[in-house]
Amino acid sequence: MEKDLIDFFEHLSCPKVNGIIFPNGDIELIDVKIDWNQKKHILEKKGKITVDFLEKNNNLFWSDCAILNSIEDKGVLVVSGESDYGSDGFVAVLNLSTKELKWIAFFDSSNPFDNLRLVGNSLYAISTSNYVWEFNLDNPTDISISWKEEG
Image 1 (cartoon, helix red, strand yellow):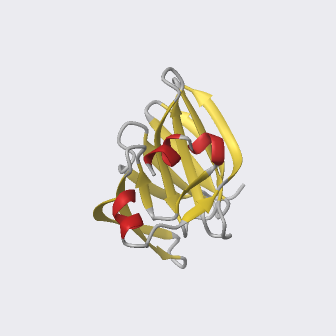
Image 2 (tube, rainbow, N blue to C red; image 1 turned 135 degrees about the vertical axis):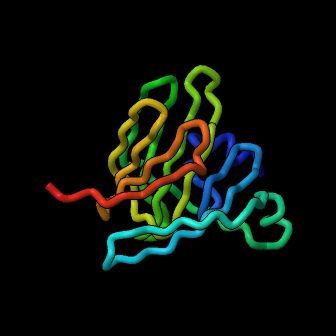
């Protein structure tokens, strides 16, 4: 299964699990609760799991990904987009010098990520629902989410 993750850019599919997925098969589970009235996302880290564990317990489901945007800067290629359902979104980061996947963020309630910016060590992925997800490139479980005013 790790090979499938390492080859993400060839087949564009990833485990359908909310959180950060690493190429060695480790997954940092992150639950997302949304208060649409307050325009607020609440993230809760739920622990770690592995792709192998999910597979052995028949709980591994793969999601096809479609790239909507990409950006290349600071030694990385970042792609973002949508997945099987309308509310799914993903971001994947590739180290350009080693050509290795660094991590994939997948969330089934983010909506597709169609805009990207890199500022310093921060990756800003903006969803089609106008939420800005800020990821630390080196510590992607360090996430903050804010509302982007339209206009």
